Amino acid sequence: MASITLDHLGKSYTAGVDVIRDLSFDIKDGEFMVFVGPSGCGKSTVLRMIAGLETVTRGRLLIGERVVNDVHPKDRDIAMVFQSYALYPHMTVYDNIAFGLQIRKMPEPEIRRRVQEAADTLGLNDFLDRKPKALSGGQRQRVALGRAIVRNPSVFLFDEPLSNLDAELRVHMRAELSKLQRRLKTTTVYVTHDQVEAMTMGHRIAVLRPCGSDPNVTNLTQVGTPMEIYDRPANLFTAGFMGTPKMNLLKARLADDSAEVLLYGVRIPVPAALREVALRHKGRPVVLGIRPEHLGLAHEIDWASDTALSGNVEILEPLGHEVIVHFDVQGQTVAGRLRSHHGMPSPGESITLQVRCEAIHLFDPTTEKRLE
Image 1 (tube, rainbow, N blue to C red):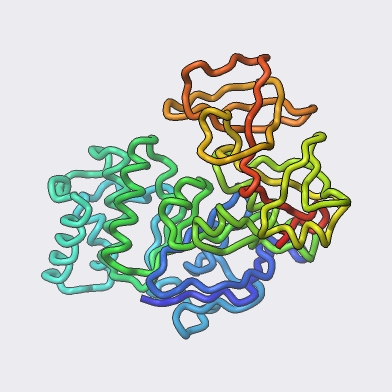
Image 2 (tube, rainbow, N blue to C red; image 1 turned 90 degrees about the horizontal axis):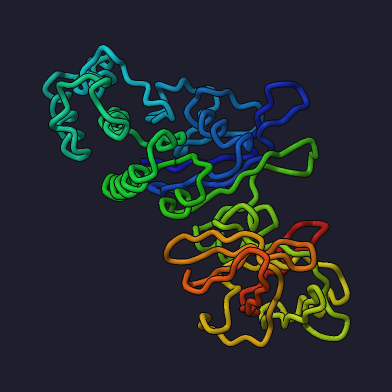
């Protein structure tokens, strides 16, 4: 096992055009780190730089104590699982898993032992004589995992390995991958655009965004545990990206005379933790953030609230155990949560949802940073 250090990492394919800009953070030994972000944010590029499949333009990349900027991929002691399974179609499952060990000229008894251990772990014993075309998508993915496991690497790298699977199988494989990583305790870096995968699998999450042309903007917006990022997003990008449905981000203003936020004529009390900063910035515009689960019908909520938002229903999204309601508040769409689909309103009807005031977030609209 090994830690990974990204030290002011940069990547440019064209002079002056950055794909990765000034990326710095550590991945701990034995940690399951997830890179999450929209398409084009550079998460797969960073993974490929760790693997040695992309060169480092600037900065240092360390695996353990060793700088690996110029180290060949085969000498980095990593194993990578790609989005496409990349299995050899003419080989059996056994040979696909064993291939990497065979080209390293490992003794055959040791190869058989490792392949059998991987097959036991991944439930592939009944498929060792089959070829990939005779396997389902989930089985092929497990073969790709087995090929990585038998290497006993210091680092596992996963590049959106579940994106080709159906929804039910993705849920199953998420759990299997998490259990496997806990059992092996191998440092793991996992790339996904799926927030649910990031929240449910990672020990920590690195949220990335495209760095754009502004030299002051870097790819990394926040690193933290799933609940740290969900409960305390550091900036507007993280707040708007993490969460399904996403956080409501509403233009508002701090009151001139009290620790309150003025939103569409409604005065929303600021929670105690934000009272000092609200008074320090009184009268200024802010972006108020509130998650849909913190807006609810008066007879359904389990918090005390004297503050409410009213508007006309635009869209209803019944999810069985809850309903996400999108309603118009003075020209801006706000999402809330109804805990029951019984008696829910119809599009066009008026609705009033209570606000859980202690759950609001405040952001500076200029710097886009969270007000602390």
